[in-house]
Image (cartoon, rainbow, N blue to C red; front, side):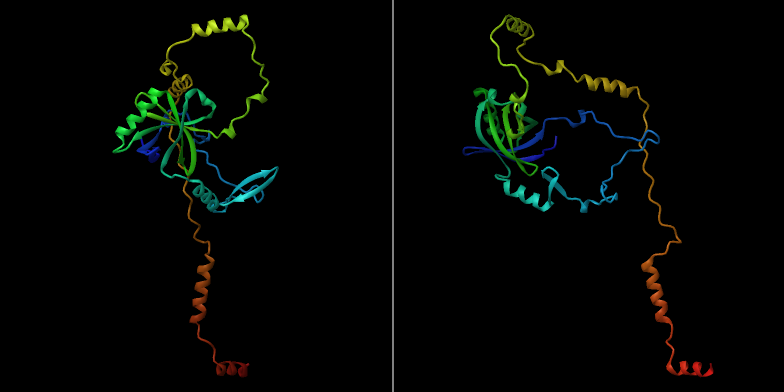
Length: 276
């Protein structure tokens, strides 16, 4: 694993040097590349201006934000960097803000999972924090900078490691009251039967290994039956034809020839005019 962030867990007067690692194995994600069926060449995308219908280089592309219906403002890269710098409080610190019961967190807020591991000198304090969280059955709410932005996160213990789950801003979670949902009902016979069924399917612990990724397994069987091939490299651009004249080079040569010719004297010009 490669650390994606290095900093310190801070709460009270305690500071623990830690590193942040992604808890997701990217190689397990099923992804495809787009390929031209005809010649097995990879498909590439180019950025075109919709008005001029020409390809646009990256240095001419700027971000636009829609502030109202079809009304945009342009935001330069330097302006975004300044905003990130202004809000990057406590850079290098995962600051514990409070500790809460796990039931108080909305699972819909969970965004991306990570692991925290202690760096040199922080092993003992790391273990103490992990064990204290396990005993108190609490989850820490923290703020830390990630990718240039301050992020809220839930810090919770596992048997060995301390895990971190970045949290979506509460403004992004939609209100479920806008959905056509029936109100709570009294304990009817149907609810009692549903409880009995839930009890029959209940277990003490959930083992995720009993529920593997069936979609990935099906894809692996499909891909194993396929014929393999290598992506074709795009042809290299050929040099311009030899008969194409470089304008600047031609002008320089023409200028040199003009300087090399001797200028006609006034006497020579008079002789030629008299002879005529």
